[in-house]
Length: 248
Image (cartoon, rainbow, N blue to C red):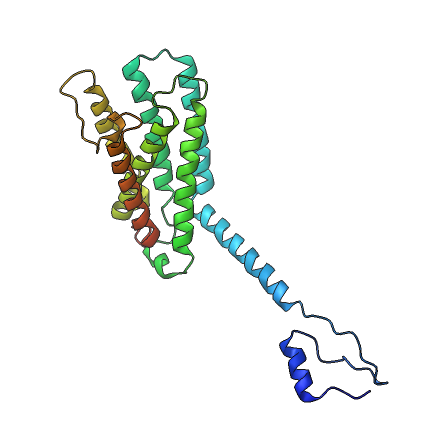
């Protein structure tokens, strides 16, 4: 049996077979083995992405934000179960916890490395987007679940609309003022939304859709305004991140 030609060896290498040592001293052909470099490389790449995502989450204090969201849902559940709320108070109560959740999400955009981080890696926009979407969905889900079996005004649809709009305000504040002051967006809007609810019982009522907490749960205008604010904040913070000076 003859040894393989150089061209045959090249074809074996291109197919991923190990060439050295394929032929024994007596001329017998040994069974070729596929290389494992590709598999090891894929596993290493997946582990690296996982570590990057975890470091991002820890650096942004996302675990703490998740804990605050859970605490807000528990507190809302206790308040709904323990209190006897009239129509006005029942509408105001969820808005307070929705603003708290939105503030926690917005503050989690603060970067520990400041503005120089913006050019540090191509995965940052993906991580920012995933974190904002995930935390917003988690907040809406937890607060809606807290109202199951209780008298939660507006239901889950109103919770989703209000959380999305308030979070959008927080993300816009993070882009303009920095992650450390991002809470000012939803907190500043809270008394405005509460006053809009107040005017439903004390005319003249404020009916602009930009004051979406005072709109009915199925109101299209309020949902569109809250959604536009959320998308605007999401787009700005995904591309640019929070406006944090270096060293803060």
